[in-house]
Amino acid sequence: MHDVRTVKAPSMPRLATASLAGTAIEFYDFFVYGTAAALVLGPLFFPTFSPLAGTLAAFATFGVGFVARPLGAVLFGHIGDRRGRRPVLVVSLLLTGASTVAVGCVPAYDTIGVAAPLLLLVLRFLQGLGLGGEWGGAVLLTAEHAPAERRALWSSFPQVGPAVGFLLANGVVLVLSVALTETQFTRWGWRVPFWAAGALAVLGLWLRSSLPESPRFLEIDDHARVPLAEVVRDHWRLVLLTAGALAVGYAIFYAVTTWSLAYATERLGVSRTVMLTCVMAAVVVKGALTPVMALLGDRFGRRPLCLVGCAAAALWMFPLVALLSTGEPLPMFVGFLGALLAFVTMFAVIAAYLPELYAPRVRCTGAAVGYNLGGVLGGALTPIVATALAERSGRVPWGVGAYLTGIALLSLGCFALLPETRPVPVSAVRPVTD
Image (cartoon, rainbow, N blue to C red):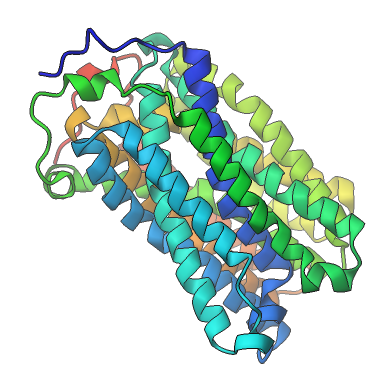
């Protein structure tokens, strides 16, 4: 057994802050691509397509990042279960940051032809690969240091990272949209947020350089030889249930933050600035409420909050599309806010819930694979399917509401089949096996 007595435990606020900052930076990298895909990548990289087909193609490259995320979860999960959680944080941040900066350097289609969208595809894949490893490392390092009675609270800080990353990405785009003309933004302004990822990656590496390894990892006597094989053999049902359960969260988030941008600006004629402001305001509330909902998860359990959030999502998807179709700022904001409140009720406790479901020896692989497979089901397909359904709809895209409601009901059923895990300490949890 590793000697854990020599490991000095960090303060939880410091550890949570470093995890939040790193996660925010990596999700900034991921989200800035989604915003660009909704606003400018179609005409620049798929100019021979119709406007609708160009948007669909841009969203398809966006979806490649989600397909890569489970592969990143397998790759970095193996490292996390075999070598430790801390190395995952460094390597995944480097990979995501470098590929994001490179996206900002890719010439458009009119310069290098078909090589332009192919390069986008490769770089988006690398982004997804890095982000697939990031979540598992950041969440586990925080969860495995946290006291059992406050694990959901401290583990929720990395979950605030996506909101911060989204606000950073869209804040930069919003400022550029206001400061630049349409021609300037389309010609070079959209590249600036990608280049900024380099400086953010350096900041993240500095913040994470002094973090200690997880004490739970150091206590493991017998590390899994091939973690993925063990997860597939012993936990396949659990992985499928968690992936299905989390699909609704991804579907909601990317319907609000990605599809709605393209739909409102292209179909409804809403300005880019208005849309970004409405979405960002709702995301601010969502980020602020994440620790609050996590405290409720410590008090009442993980599973009850997930069930409530799923039920609320199923009831809100039709009102969401109705409010969006008005094209008016206040109704759109209310629609986005209601959807993200349902989202945060679930996802505030997921960072504690998923690790508690798996044995420590395969926790990094199992939790990360389940989490990122949910991204494929809910995040990769939603902008593409919603765009296609909206094109066939009338003034109100009811088909999109039906699609999102169906995903919410699927996730509700999956959460109903998962067990409660509070308040058993992470190191003592009995994993769910088949």
